[in-house]
Length: 152
Image (cartoon, rainbow, N blue to C red):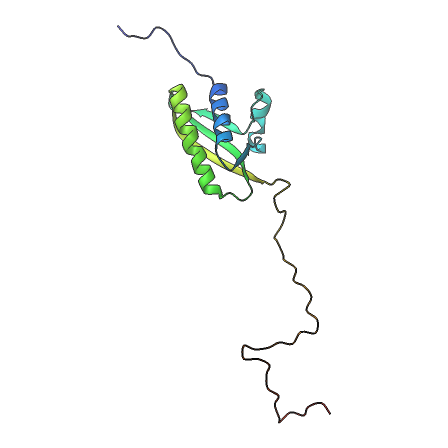
């Protein structure tokens, strides 16, 4: 005799919402991206308030899943550590909350997010114009060469 009294099913939408919350908690993740054109067909089949850049596929059974998350990273953050942190957080939280094993968490970085405070291009410092300056070496002005004719 088993202790089971029924079946517990966790929908992909629940997993998607957990992933969305995890993405908001990782510093450097600006947002979950919309699905790419490759996955655009899935967009029409789903209708939720959550971003569509989260794809969940089944593993060998109902207790195993594979996750793909498309994100935009805040300008200035190093992408590999942000993506690694998101992978760890998603795997740990989804497994802890749902009991479903996450075999893979693939993070796709689709863009970089810049705010109004973010510099939009390379910073070039303009130097003040140099007028009438004479170059001097460390020892002072260069001595005049007597072999060369001077001003007359």
